[in-house]
Image (cartoon, rainbow, N blue to C red):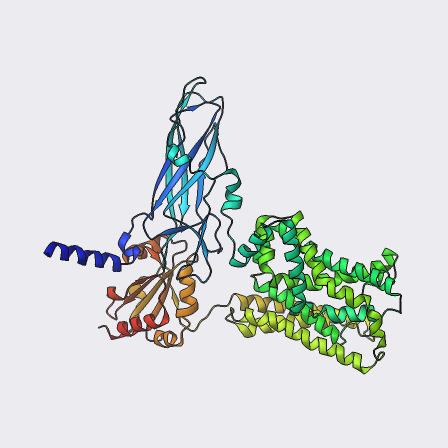
Length: 601
């Protein structure tokens, strides 16, 4: 009974410890390298497999990560004369959700096998050659991400003359090699939940995908993105002279074609640009550009300037504003107004086309989407004669334009407000956006008559200055970080030097690649109770992203093995080991730890 009790207590202690404390400095994974043959004939090919057996409960990031700051799993071989290393095949990633991430992450767990084909030169002389390389990865559990790890690889290969018999080995491993169509580009590509839904639609076949994209185009008419196009369409077709129904229908078709071509360009750019195109829509600067365009459209509704097809362009094309070329260009204008805005809403479709590299198919699908979007305008433009039955030009038209101007301001807010929730310096961001818009409007878009040539130059210079200041203010606001807690950033000082006054010390060991660290900054360190209690502490942040010798010594001193590691020191400088935490800690629990640290002698 006594032995069973001891075993039970030991198991409880082990399972209650964090993985970082459990493993200490042990490896996240056991790594082995294998060859597909016992020997290799000079001039032939063979395969290499690298097997990572992960510790229970741990995972590593996939080769293609869903977050830019996460460290991917990468296999690299050192160059060796007479040997040519092929593309590394990574396994298909699994999408899993963890406590430190709101979105599913692409990971590998349990056993991970990486494959590569190797070609040898016929001129290689018989003998033993050593292949070396490195496999790098980042291990995590459900709450903690550990420091990136690199394991060195070494494999001895015996090269034999032509005609020598060779024997396949380790076939149980190499039989798990993914099929040709499951290479790194396809198998380990990671998608968001919206992109996965769209991918399933596309995989059902082109006809089904075309119907789906056409329906999405129709649905876009219910979004704020179409507001700028309604007055544009009404003013363009309503302002034309009375025409036959057939003539109006032809012009409307070319107007529709222009919208569809603008969307086809969106699909083409997405397919050509790849994954980087999707990142564009995550940037605050995308919101700045889109909002500025929409605010400029609103200003035009209030009479700041008129949106028309440039006369020089119409003259060059040899067509009147009312011809089919004019209708096509106005359709392109409408499409250009809608496409960037719509891309922010249909980001799943844009990202999917980008990640799959669907160039021609992506252009076709988005062209059909543009047709669906423009269908109501085909009807509106065809029956534009009905507009002529309304009371002719008068103050009611001015009122309608201003009404749409107010709607457009609302659209701009639709994009700005969600972005503000992610920014710390909200006022700076708004002032910067206002300066950019003001400089653009007052310096370049205002075409009122009566300005002298000198004043036009002056207002242009003023506009440039305002835009530059706005960009500077906006950039500062985007990169601004909360400063409610008076952090001391560790820079080679000793803890004794930092421990000034009769206050306990808190140390946050973090890294830029650490997702739980970002969650900690976002949720815990912004809590009002934590901010208030922090005034009674010496709050120290230690950046372990790329530790130098001084930081490594500090990490060794406090046995830091995972990120984030949260350590409390009493007023006397002793670590309060019962308060140590590894991984994300919510505000409630962190407040309790802070209160205990204040009560410690």
